[in-house]
Amino acid sequence: METRPNRSGHFLHGTLQTFEWHEVINWLRAETQSRQKNHNALTLVKNEALSVVMLYFQKEAQMHEHHAPGQFTLTVLEGRINFLLYLKSETISTELSQGQLLVLEEPTPHAIIALEESAFLLTIIAAR
Image (cartoon, rainbow, N blue to C red; front, side, top):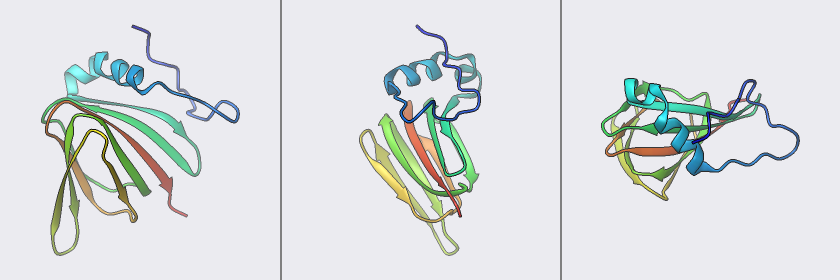
């Protein structure tokens, strides 16, 4: 298995960059942090306008309530998660599985629970 890619700076290298998501998930799964904290992440791209992050969660791992810094999409690449959206008057629970895409238009408090070992891609557009 290859070692984790050097992503210092997280800026695109030139006009185009490609990633093999199976390889990235395997790097995240194999790292010590995944075994110790039940989750792991790697920022693939980050600049003033865009962040692309690959996340890996073991079964029952959680990302507690937080806000994203802007609009985002979440694409489940492997597994199954529960996405909890906290609105003022209610909590909306949405189960997502492999191949599903969630779009959140406003920075709203939310949480994620892995219902099984899961990997997902988070694409965040910075608020202006």
